[in-house]
Amino acid sequence: MLTIQNLTKTYKTGDKALSDVSFTVPKGQVVGLIGPSGAGKSTLIRCINRLVEPTAGTIALSGKPITGLGAGELRRMRRRIGMIFQEYALVERLTVMENVLSGRLGYVGFWTSLTRRFGPDDIRRAYRLLDRVGLMDHADKRADALSGGQRQRVGIARALAQEPELLLVDEPTASLDPKTSRQIMRLLIEICDENGLPAIVNIHDVPLAQQFVARIIGLRAGRVVFDGTPEQLTHEALTSIYGAEDWAAMKKGTEEDEAAERDARRHMAEIG
Image (cartoon, rainbow, N blue to C red; front, side, top):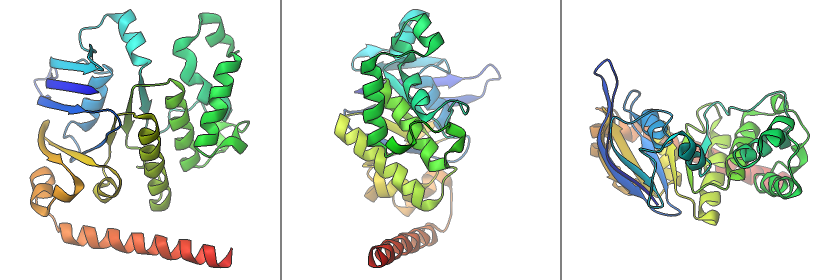
């Protein structure tokens, strides 16, 4: 379980990115984190793994504090937190397999990390993960030869190679087309369910979040202004998060996209 209590981040300029943020994420739950640009979503994720230092408040994972840890303890704690990035953060010149194995670097000695000569257990684990994300046939390809959706799957496998207790996912579908976005979100949800992993997914696509996650937290100006189910995310709730907009039109557009995807699947099944 992830527990955040009264988390605040104030920059040296005096700008307050987060203000008194508190919530918990139980085992296996995927939380969609939504809000306008500048609401504090990315800052929150980076405070959790302390890429950004909180000004006040506490963060704990499975009852063990993250805030207040020294450098060595923080390195060990970060091994337990898998991070999946919007821009994939792969080493382009390395193969898919080598990128996945890089998720084990926090567990191996200096010479292994330098030479990338991983043990058989790590290699078997990496192959299992590649199979799970549907990339077994791409293990020896360079990362720069992959599509965006394939790169994101490599990022997911790399994060899972850490054997994490928490996943932090920063805009996993921002650079992907609608169909691939749904596939990636579906994969994330399934993996978290299979492994009992709590996850926080920073996502701009509200309809996509409503379709896949069980819980949505809305931030505005660094404060939690909504915490509930997708069904509870009414037009009024969306307005409190983002301001006034034609939310009914957004929902209609999403339903049309979903219908088009169903039609495409039916067509492919018929001609297959």
